[in-house]
Length: 185
Image 1 (cartoon, one colour):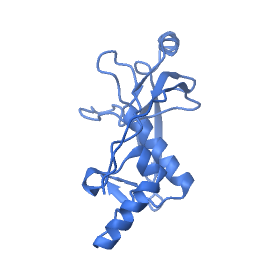
Image 2: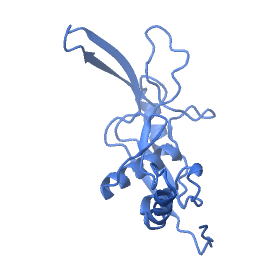
Image 3: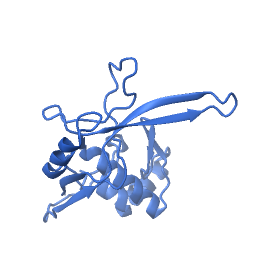
Image 4: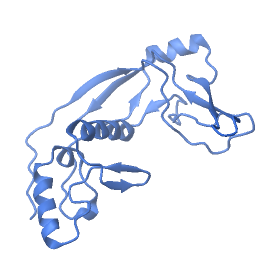
């Protein structure tokens, strides 16, 4: 059963995001040298500034919505689990029920389901990448942080059996930095 979709309008939400504590959004850890940072942040290749990928923000919103609504996170994609109506449907009867569930599911309707489900429609939420604000860029330039626009935090994991310490360095955006203007459509 395919449902015709007609665009009747768009809603644009714009906002700023301020970090209340250090923020780490993982980047590429290729080419780490001895004594280098283990976990780097993702950066805009043109400006070298950290940014928030729209896909990361969208995924976090989806995850929080699934938990808030008490939906089972039943479909493994890569290393994470998401809610997908009919993820475990095998029989024709289960697939028909899944398609009906999909029509009434707030999460699947807004965020979409994997294409192989056979009953998906285009996603209804677009989340754009969010750049660091110019005010925060200027403030961080004056502070002279550990790395350009970021700080290095050392974490230490302690082996509970041997008591051996395993330190690692993580790059993160300091507290108080503003990203914006974010946009969701």
